[in-house]
Length: 414
Image 1 (cartoon, one colour):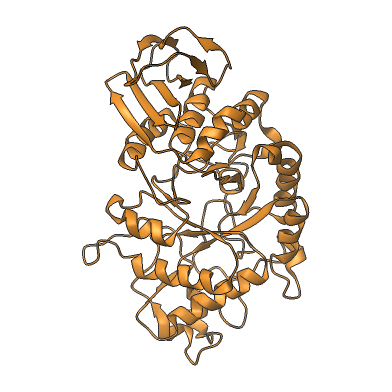
Image 2 (cartoon, one colour):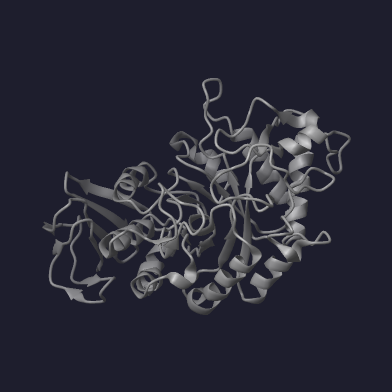
C-alpha cells in the first residue's frame, strides 16, 4: 500500500500569523516544484481566526472571528477572500485548481467567546454553555474550552463544525491539544472528544485526513488512534536541534512495527528552509534551518523508514538545493510511502540500525548518533547479492560505511 501524506504546514515559518498571500505563495511553489514528488497538502496552522495573531504569543481575551453558531471563521484582514461567508473555500479552490489539497488547524473544543455569548448550536436546541467543560482547557492557548462528550448537543456541535469545513472543501484537519491529553482521573482524557470529531467527519461524506497533535500520543492507545485518526503526533514540537532529532529515535522505536493500513505515527514537521519568520524560537527569528546536511539526511531517512508523513515547515521558496534534493529523492520517497513494517534492529552508544523487510528486498538505515565520524559495519539477518545506496544510487561492495557525525546511510539489499 502506498501513501502520499506530504506537503507544507505554515507553523514553523509563520507561527499563528500566516496570511492568505503567504499560503498562496507556498501553494504555487509546491505545485511548481514539489507536486510531482507527491507533496500536495497546504495546511493553514493555528489561529487563522485571530485578527491580531502575533506569531507564537497568544493573547488572553482576544476577540476572535466567530459566526452566529459559535464556529470560528477566518479573520478577513488576513484572509480577504473569506468575506461574505465564503470562509476558506476560495483558498481551498485555489489549491485544488493547482492539483493540490488544502487543510486547516483547529484547537479541540468550543471557543470561550462562544461560551460567554452562549451561542446556539446548529441543528440542536442546545447552546454553547450546555456542552462546554470549563474545567478542561489548553495550558498554552486561551482560545477554547473542552467539550463534554456526554452532554446533549456535543455531537451536534462537532457536526456543525465539520459541516462548515466540508463546505470549504477542506481535505485535511489538524486537531490540536488532543493527542497527548492525560490526567490523573482519566489516562486518556481525549478519547471521547476524538470520537465526536471522527463521527462528524464521517457524516460529511468527504474524505478528510484527521491529524492529532501534539505528542507524545500514548502508545497504549494505539488501537484507538488507528481506528479514529489518520495520523497522530509521537513527539512534542520538533525543531532543528540535534537533541530533538536524537530523541526521535527513541520515540520512533516505541511505535515500530505493523499498523492498521492508512494510519501513521507522525514525527512532526520538517524544519527546513527559512523558519520563524515572525515567530522566534528560543529567541531566534527569521533564520535558515540549523541542521547540518548530515542531520537533514538523517531526519529524512528516519522519517522515511518509519513512514512518517512529510510536511515541510519552512518557507518553500527558501529551500536550498540540497534540501530539495533530500525532499525529492524518488527511491527514498518510495520507501516512505510503502508502509512496509519497520523495526529498530540494533542500537549501541554510537549507532542505530533500522530495517524494513520488503517482499524481495531489505531496506537498511544505518545511523551514526555519535559526535564524531566513525566506520560502522552492519550484518543483516539475511543473505544478499547486491547493495544499492538510495541516496547516491551507487552499488556498494559491503555494508561497511564511514559515516559523518550525526549522519547516515540508507541502502536496499537484494
